[in-house]
Length: 552
Image (tube, rainbow, N blue to C red; front, side, top):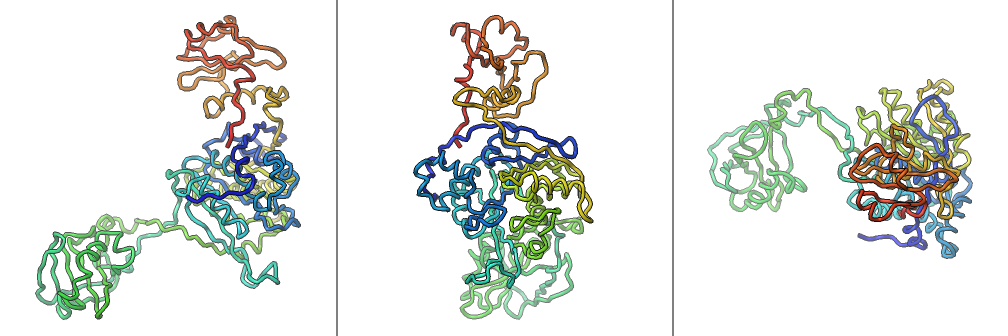
């Protein structure tokens, strides 16, 4: 598989994102699992792992398109001060030679890696992009998610022809792209459904003469000459036949196509033109045979076959629906044109229509799956939250959104829009709901030591996550050191801010729960290695043995 290299890639790929905690600032609308997070989205994504790794069903991101335009409120050139500082720390002096495309790739790669970890096995990610970085994005997504997990490119018409933002351009851009990747092959997309259409079952074949009989491919085949049969078109009915060209993918895709390819397509010299073949013992409809027609003109190779309504549909056909492919083109030019005040917020050139986000979410989250998580780590004006709230209001669902916005407008624009959507704005009724607003807070570790400014419960949750890769749920009981049991191992974290803790006999006497094995963190250990082995105890020293932020 081809891979993309750029200046700074090696350092970015091997970069260990430090773990920061999230600090809840305020709540709007009451108890909820919805989150809006202000801060560097790389740090925010890492901070979400202990609670959300492998749980997010739908990720949508609208990253900077990297057009070079810095005039928008939505910085589009990866030149924000946070990004410059991060590139200097991670890439170092090599970063002085970065082009804007190198910078964009350095920015996107670690964020996509973390988004993949947050995705559920049956989840999918949708990424909006345009021509500036679409090719680069496709290559790094192939590398991160696996080329086999590329699903499709959606092409979105964002403006009408003739309505251009740049009149002196040689070509007018009216299309943007959304790349879709799944996490694994467990992902199932929700396709549009249609009632089974019998309008094409309108052919009746009348046999007039006595056919010649041969055996081909182990099947009885009756051959009718040109004047020994007639094909009539009639009112559609489940008693009639559908005409299908035996050509292209059909020749490999089903038993009838393969039979025509292997046994009938080369018989013109033997049987002549315009013959009808009646092949017995083939197909899955109410008849035990299918009709095939051979070429009608000299030199032609194409033919047709005629089949009945599939036998599994003959009863209850009126209630049968079939899935249709999701179209990879959407004309949303009108929605983009009317977007300016959607959500009661003006956000120049950075918005996506709520209709678009609702469509994307509906492709991966079924109507009866009302508890899934939707994540947007380039939140902008908050369209993703708006779409989730609208869907929940429509069907009574409980879908959860998580938004991350690193720019300073996270509270005054992103969160404000969501507040207005919840309460209603102008003549638009409110959806109801709520959210908690967070800031990316303190790092967990400073210079190799635990940061004592971090709440102890958040440290406990991190320790549990690093040991189990599962979500921490505080256990019942009076032993504050006990974190829980996982796969037969009871985990203890004996930590007291500003004090040294010791794993000793006195502490062991506080353990009331019996387990197959014990993993105990403390600052010091007063027990012998022999004693630890004899009692199936693993000691880990604080802070030395705390797992640091792993590389991507």
